[in-house]
Image (cartoon, rainbow, N blue to C red; front, side, top):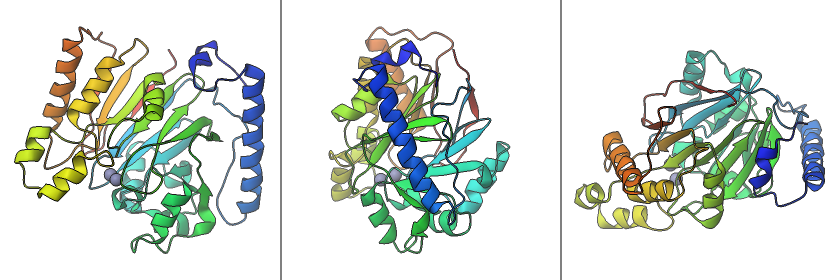
Length: 322
Ligand SMILES: [Zn+2]
Ligand SMILES: [Zn+2]
């Protein structure tokens, strides 16, 4: 396993030897789980704990309340985060970037709202792809009439703060605040890149802040513009739900966080889960650029910042090692 000195600032506040032990333990744990379920699920385990490949691919197939699905991969392995589109749409999006559902090692699930789990039955029953979710999210999927018939032999437990290794990536789920049971965000690394996704969160808690601050590639919710929400069509109870600490992150909250914690290692920022009614890409981006300017942050031409479209897939980003 390759260990880069650049990772020493990460939250694994342990020595390298302890870190290695923990990785090995987790690798074995995953391997044992895998061997039990291999017969039932098309399941493969990478004993290569970190991908030594430099490339990190990212594509958003959809982002927002009508569906969420993100692809991360490298030429030899791939994962999806959330499956909030029909399996047919997911397959179509994969094809567009030269992949298939059979290339997907696993689906990681943030929480059990339908815009994140829509394809669960087909993914588990027809395609036999392992689904990693917290116990709370698994319970939620099985009590949702659209996903209740999912095949639980393809379910694997995610535990916040407990890393796992899949498809050449180290994956760390962390708790976030949202009105679903046991919601998580993800901090995902290969040997060169640190990626953090946090969507559907009412506020940025300490743990989420830690991982967002450690990442090169950030996918952060920027759900609503406060004025548009207050003046828009949503009833008061819904406005209050969205604004609550278990709701969604506003443009200002996302922009303030990013501008306060901006650092030189950030290469990509994707604003995500924008509301159809209460936001536009232009408004979300303007809020962020204004905040960065207020903080005196100048962006060099290599930094990519964009807002992910709700229903239009993003390009495939191939992010190499440096
Ligand atoms: Zn959502
Ligand atoms: Zn949600």
